[in-house]
Image (cartoon, rainbow, N blue to C red; front, top):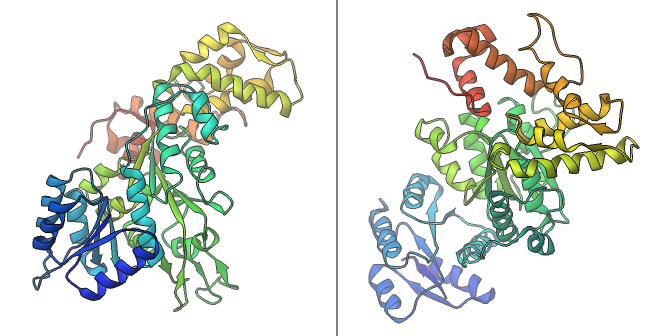
Length: 456
């Protein structure tokens, strides 16, 4: 049963008819008194709660009823309905325990999706199962590992993939966030539709609207033709917004609007377009801390993290390193036509104990470099070790590693470590030496998990 709480008869009628057509049993209440009467008779499976159902439009009555409902029905999902101008009220409601919020005027498809998603996620979680069982149910062939932490992640995404729930993937750089996003899409009902990837960290604030929403000819100096934006390309499918923590405040507002209303206007156009997309975001930053510091909008945070998945770092799942190495070597055998290629036992053990701040990406690059530059088909510790020593830290000042022996990200990590050691961890001095701002350095220190003490 779906319970609608709203004092507007037109809203009650509209939503009731919508969900009755969708096969729901619907009850309506115009406020706390009728709500209590209904709850004495039966327990709803999901509740739609308007935040202003009295003459007073402050939302206090709605928040008060929300808290009462959460206390009485802690397991029943509550979706808030509010006007765009009352987004702050919706945020208060999310803090109080609501599962989602919809703004007026709503889109019927979006509202139905939100309710179905809330119902799906409210069902009890399945007991964690083994890797073989997961592979029988889902398409996870490109995700390697059997660590319990990884299996928990796979169980979660297997459960949420069939819904349209927005998913936030967190984890250190190189842990495989893009692979998880692809797995969510491939196991969803949108699998035959586009999967569009966007690295927000690589898009400047001035190009944000053009890249994501498109532009019309003449919108700016170099706009010589119309361009379709990433959201429109992803219509009916999924869009993966990587590095969302790097988004500037102005762009955050624009993104929130399209995620909430599912509408946007191409740059230079006054005509709105509507899209139906499943949003998957990823970041290696602590968004909750950024919200506290005023660097990331709280309403946007609640909009993108209905489900949060944290990927374990490679050091947290060392038992999977030999499996990953075997997987990489198997692919390289075919790629480089070296069927006898293999890693000896001593090297496999050495790799398992190796510190890999770049996680899976660093391990993959290390294995491929060893394969490319080894003379034999048996990879030994020496084949891997020689590539680790070719770094800026171990070379004379001014020299660089050979092309192909180190990724740009690994070089960045090594240079930051070297500068931190040289300047005794004085962040301001290190930032000046590297030619970046303190804020930019803080972001990189957090990205690579390098300990530091903030200075003034």
